[in-house]
Image (cartoon, rainbow, N blue to C red; front, side, top):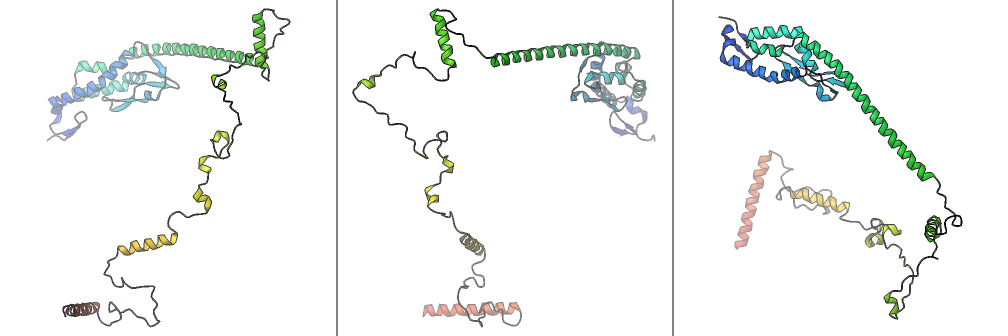
Length: 333
C-alpha cells in the first residue's frame, strides 16, 4: 500500500497514490483556487503597458497569496512617498523562482497547460515595464513640481492681498478742508458727514427736530422719574446677583439641617437589621435599658444548666407545653 500523501489544494490526506490528482474533485478545487488568483494577475498584466505611479497610502501594503509558491506577495511596490501599482506582483511573476515553482506546481497537480502561461511573465515584458516605470516616475515628479508651483503662487497672492488690506486699514485717512474743496452743495454734505463721523462728540446742529407724538397732545403730562435701580433685582448683565448665589430664606435664618441626624440614621439601621431576625428568637423582647443588679442572670434557654443541649431543649419544650395547658385550663374555668 502506498504511503499517504497530503494534497495542498484539497487540504486533505489521500491514500490512492498519484491517482488523486486526476480525480474530478481535485481538478474542481484546483480550478477554483486558480480563478481566485487570476483577477489579480490580469490586473497586473494590464499595468505592463504603462506603469501607474501614485502617492503612498497605507492601503498599498496589501498582499496576495501565490498558490504556486505557497507564500504571500506584496501587490504594489512602494519607495518613500511613491507607489508603483502592481509592481511587487509583476516582479514576483517575472522572477525565476516563481517560474520553477509554477512548473513544479503544474506537474504535481496536473493543471491545464494553457492556464500556466497566464501566471508567468517573460523577462522581456518586465524589462519594458521597468522602462515605463522610469518614465512614469519622471512625469509624476514634473506634475508634482507644477502643483507645488501653483500652490506657491496662490500662497503669494493671498499674502499680497492680506498685506494690501492691512496697509489700507493702517494708513491715516486725511480729511479735506471744505475751503479748499469744491463749493458745490453735494461736496459740502460729503465733508460734513466725514467730519461728523470722525469727531468724538456728536453734534445736534443739523439734526431735524423730533416729531411730537399724539400722546403728548392729550393734555396729560408725563414725568420722567429716572431709572429705578433696585439692588439684587435684574439680570447678571445689569450687575445683579446671580440666582444660584442668592441665599434662600430658610438657609439665611439659620443653619438648618436637612434630613435625619446621624444618630437617627444609626438607630434606623439597627432596626432594619433586627427586622431580618426571627421574632421568636431568644431574648427578642428583652429590654436592654432596664436596670439590673450585679447578680442578674438570664432565665431563658437553660444556658446555665449542666448536661447536653438537647436535654435542655426537651425540658424547655415540656415546660412550655405544661404552661400552655395551664393557661387553657384557666381560660375555660
